[in-house]
Amino acid sequence: MKAYGRRPYDLCHCAYCRLYIRPGRGSRRMLPGLNYSRLFCDPECFRLFNQSRPHRDLP
Image (cartoon, rainbow, N blue to C red):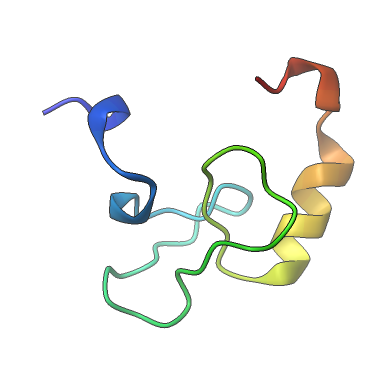
């Protein structure tokens, strides 16, 4: 099964720190301001991810 075909909430790693997020935990939440599907374990990871990556390469 290809990972690309999965729905966003089936993914199980934080996009920034790669911490494993267990399916069914409250920590797997979509944070506001996202225009693409990615998971973060923590709002701080979301902020750091946005700082560490240029926005022009996002779809």
